[in-house]
Image (cartoon, rainbow, N blue to C red; front, side, top):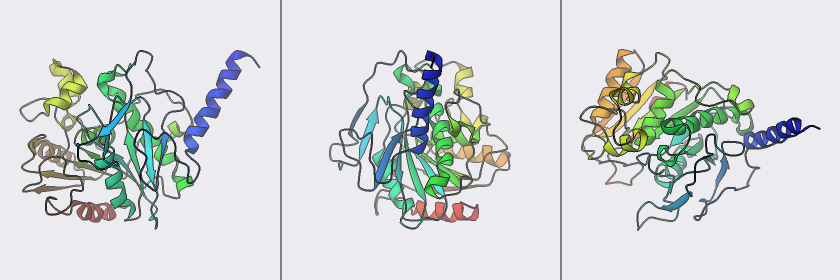
Length: 326
C-alpha cells in the first residue's frame, strides 16, 4: 500500500468512528467535571477540527458561577467540538440540536445544554448539546469557525437518525443568546458550504424542521448590539460590511423553517429589539413565526426555576413545534 492509500484508509476509518458515535452506554471526552448521568459525548470531527494549525489555546471547563453545581459548567478555548447526547425514555421520533450561549467567549454547556436537554428529553426528543469552537482562538476560519461546527453538527445529527431511531427530517435547532445568533445563522440564512466534506455525514442537507432563538444576539450593527459578542466575533473595529454581513435580520432566506422566539423585555445584556427585528424580518419573508416577550426574566433565563422564570416557555415551544411537525 502506498503512503497516499494508507492515509486515505486511516482517515476513512476515523471518520466512520466519528459518525458511529459512542457505543451504547459509553462515555467519552469527559473533562474535569464528569458528565451528568445518562449523557454521552463524542467529537463531531474525525481527527482535529479544520483550520487549527496555528491554534495553541488550551481547552478549559470551569463552573458558570462560584455557587454552581458540578454539572453547571462552561467551556472556554474549545479545541475539540463535541455533541453531548441524551436519549429520551419514550422517544417521539424527533430530535433537537441545542446551541448554548456564552457571548462567543465561552459555551454554557450546563445551563443551556444539559439542563435544557433534560426538559426536552422528558418530552420525547433525542437531544444533542453542541460544544463549538470560539472565533477569537486563532482558527483559520476566523468568525466562521462556530458556523463550521454548527453545520457539521446538524448534518451529523441527521446522519445519526437511523441509529438513534428518529426521523432525520424531524430535527429542530434551538439556540440561546450568542448561541441564538449561531442557531439563526445556521437555519435562517441560505446555506453556504463553510468547510470541505470529511465523510458521509456531510452529504446530509443543512436543514432543520423548526428553529428556536431564545434571547438571541441578532444584530451586529446599530444601537442594540451586544458589544461582547460582536467584539469576540468580528474584533474591536469591524467594518460596516462585516457588521452587516453578520447581522442576521439582513439575510433571512425564504427557506427558513418555522421559528419560535422568546425574550425578556428587561434583558440588560441583549436588548429585546434583537428579537423584534428578527420577527419583522421573518414576517417580511412570510416565514411562520411565533414570538413571546416576557415582562421580566433578565438575560440567560434558560430553565431557571419559578418564581424567577419569566414564563413556561418550554411548553409554549412544544405546542409550536408540534403544530409544525417536530
